[in-house]
Image (cartoon, rainbow, N blue to C red; front, side, top):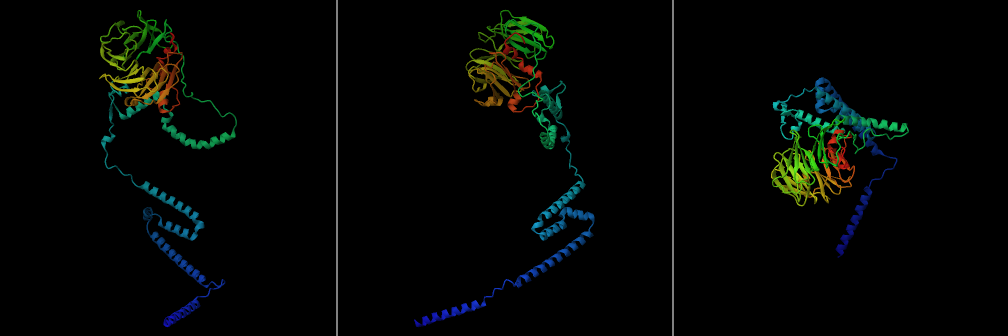
Amino acid sequence: MRGLAGRERGAAKAGKAAGMKAAKKVPKVPRAGKMTKPKRTAKRLLAVGNQAAASEAARRARHLKALGRVSGAERELEELVFGDSLNAEEDELLRRLAGPRRVAAAEGKGLQEESSDSGVENEAKRDLPLKKPAWVDEDDEAEENVDMTHKYRKDFMKSDAETTLTKKKLKKRLEEQFQQAMGGVPAWADLENRKKSKRTLSDSDSDEDDDLLRRTGNFITSSESLPRGILKVSTCLPANQERFANGKLVTVQFHPSAQVVMTAGHDRSVSLFQVDGIRNPKIQSIYLDSFPIYKARFSVDGEQVIATGTHHSMFFVYDMMAGNIIPIPKVRGVEEKFLRNFELSPDGSFMLLIGTSGYLHLLSMKTKELISTMKVNGRCTASAFTPDSSKIYSYSKEGEVFIWDVRSRKSLHKFEDEGSLEGKCIAVSKNNQYVACGSSSGVVNLYTTDACLKEKHPKPVKAIMNLVTSATCVTFNPTTEILAVASRDTDEAVRLAEALFILLKEDTGENEPVTEVKTALELFTVLARGDSKF
């Protein structure tokens, strides 16, 4: 035990002695006035900087000497391929020496040098020769001809000799037809004017602001064009002024090809007038004994007039070429008490008689014989052929629309008119894209044909609610730009809607000509007024 205690005391003494020696070796802190080592460090750094500057200057001199030996073409090629390395190195050295306060100046100089480099590159690109194509395909230069005898392109033919047209000529003809239908080039289709307006808009903004602040007064001016929804319509001489009807007129129709208008009504007469806008002379009048006319129509070729009565199971055909009145007393297979409403196919091949209890009788226009009979659920109130005469849209009193195939006489589809309490009238646009359905509530729903053929409950693209009485007539004008709706139940119940504005939500800013409005109004002026003048 004593030995252990002695060892511990010896170790403690040795530790104290080592601590005193370490304390003696700690260096003394120099005073604030004496800075010997930092001065030496600064001198060394300055010497190193001088050596670096001298070496950089020597390297630059060698580079300049080497550049002086090469020719001008080689120097431009070197700068084009590798860039202006000398200027870049000088900029980097200046940036390092200038420090953070001169960074902006260095960047500005670098931008100038970059622009000069880009200028050299552009000049070099312009000097390079243009590459020739590897080969030339003769089929690319040949213009492809389009067959104009197709049923969708027959209307664009100006003569029977134009069986084919090039794509460029067909495009130009389509543009001409579009401009003719729109009354000129719309603002949204004139690309040159749009580009000019964009360029001048920025320049004129500041000038307009200055003018606004310089003058006082009324800043509101009248519009040069008519407001949206107003068409310029002028009242002309009555078409039947040489023979006013003794009763109510129910039918007014223009001839398909001649400047002739037909009127018919309850006075049991059909009259033809030549429309010249000055005198409108009467051409002819035919009288049907004890036969108040319910509806009369020109045939597609314009050679016949078909007329049905209000309380008869027969109808008359007037041959205008021969001057004969042909009665059709009975059609075999048609058991109807009254034959009133009918429709003619656009191709002139069929006549559709709308019977009672939902029966539709399809007749041949040549022989006036029955081809087939179709039936809808309930009572059919109106029908319409498609422009290609391949389908029939029949509108029932319950608000359902049936679509029939003319060839097979089978029902293709059925859909419900939204919100219809009782169906009254139906029309298909001339381009076969839209269907309009008018109901007893005065609402006219506008559908697309694609939705009508696919959906059972299609949503209308537009609901026209401008009538407060039953919508008894709807029709499109030939270019599908105007939709006319009318009602017999009140006076002056005629409304015209711009179909393009409804569907495309665009306004061309140009008024439609009166000649286009005339075709849309041909069935409604008399029906709305209910008098004997037109």
